[in-house]
Image 1: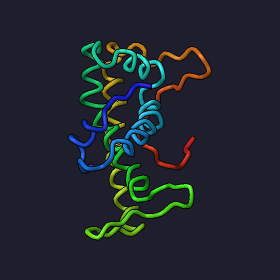
Image 2: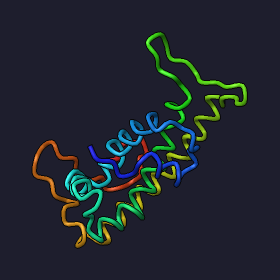
Image 3: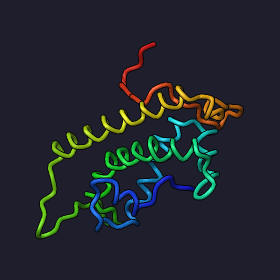
Amino acid sequence: MFRFISAEKLKERSIINGNVDNKLLLPIIDECQEYYILPLLGSSLYNEIGGQLPSSLTVANKKLLDEYVIPCLIKYVQYESPIYLNYKFTNANVSTKNTDESTPITIDVSSKLMDRFKNKAEWYGERIVRYICANRVLYPSYCLSNTNDNVDPLSSGYDCGIYLD
């Protein structure tokens, strides 16, 4: 499994605190990369970029990754993180984390925060789609789909939650 961003780089480029355990962030990065970024790029381009990591990225793929994909991935990780970082999953139960120096936010505040991150992540996702479509000649694998297990790229970075035929 390849990662487009490391936990250290994520903490450097986001609001996620440096003291957050990498072991907690890595599964969130992996999940967001597969759940949100894979559909934006489609299987062919996603795997092409992943196969070129870390040192053999083409100039076009490096630009796409650095300027478009990673900022989007960071926002999606920030969107998904509050739930995973606020709760501790153990054999006995799921509990909230708390220290003497902090107070967990309410579900309502958490929901509003997550909505902001999702809106920003979708905006970055739309930038990915528009950039690739405007530069199709640089990304011939974007629309390649030749097997049933491939994920075809989305036509938009936004998810309205309502199906309009």
